[in-house]
Amino acid sequence: MKFDTAFQVLNRFHAARVLVLGDVMLDRFVYGSVERISPEAPIPVVNVERQSDMPGGAANVARNIAAMGARALLLGVVGEDPSAEDLQAQLALMPSIEMHLVTDPSRVTSVKTRYVADGQQVMRADRESRLPLAAPIEKVLLEEYREMMAETEVIVLSDYAKGVLSDSVTRAAIAMARSAGKTVIVDPKAREFRRYRGATILTPNRLELQTACGSECATDEQVAAAARGILEQNICDVMVVTRGKDGMSVIESDGATAHLPTAARQVFDVSGAGDTVVATISLGLAAGAGVADAAALANTAAGIVVGKRGTATVTTGEMIAALTPFDGRGDPQKIFGLDTVLQLARAWREQGLKIAFTNGCFDLLHPGHISLLEQARLSANRLIVGLNADLSIRRLKGPDRPIQSEVARAIVLAAVKSVDAVVIFQEDTPIRLIEALEPDVLVKGADYAVDQVVGAEFVISHGGKVVLAELLSGHSTTNTVKRVARSTGT
Image: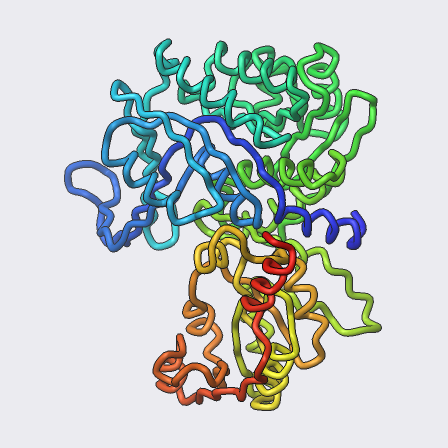
């Protein structure tokens, strides 16, 4: 996929909306250490140190969509229990997710609890119901679905075999969507794919395809043959098969076939990688890309997410960084993920260079921004800029901001001569970035006092300094947006 095409598609993620229907769940990670074996049985005793919750299943698909700067409409079923409250609390942290969770008092909220000791997963405990929905709940769910369907052109059915996407719900959801001209992407879990008849795209992994077709799917040829067998039954129009270390295969009903090698550099955790794939494909299609290009972006996203621990997500900035070409003749890429920018910072320090850091939204870059960046660069040998992701800006400034997507903002910042590296962060503040980078100089505008600057205490305690840059008066993105709104009457 050409970089220019990738940039255009990723830049349109910002305006995309995708409806996700399926099995929502809570992914719970319990971290600790193992120092002994239980005297009661030959099992490790985990000394629990901390716990982390995050949305899982269909909720993780929505979380990935939100992390890439788009909007997700999430529809699922939860129980009337504390786990449902925990899941809703996690989803509420992401304003780009509009959640519609139907409560069924007769069910439990699905929870996957993974116990991780010394970096190694030692056990997983699942709390769930796999029974199909009761008829009254099914009716409510499909009524909600019919109303929400009008708000998007792309729909994801995320099937984790927990009962929400029963045969009747799945068939009704696909029929309603296709009759309305919507694109339907199904991440399947059923052993038999006929229940998904009418879907636009199926995204099974290798094992799921092998189970459904009953033959081995080890080679490119075997995968393509198995996928064509599904297509010949008119179950779907396209098969996108994820194949772990062997990458991804795209087989279309018109005979077009592409085998994409894995984009992963290192693999730490494959939890939720399939969710990242289906989320990226859905956004690619919503942004106007063809299936092959959407799958290529999904392959890149999967390669990034498996290099993270836990049920992780990917940002469009990380994807741009992975896709940016460098032929050795011009400046190297300037947009990085956290791990890569840390390596870059270490290399600079080994050369005896001082590093400055500043951060902001940088929406509608103006002369005031340029002045701040130039002052920041003059304070050290290299300048790293932390850029608020779309998701964090929506939390801070409301649903109508940012004006430009994180991809567009990162590309513009990277073109500024005084900037040496751009890294996008999704948190509300850059404190995690600052603590990881340990900059020599922390720069913020003079409208702040030193004690108001996030990370100032940390930087000073590590021998660094804080610089308050002079402001260029008369420039403000917020005021510019207000002037435009007044002039257009909006």
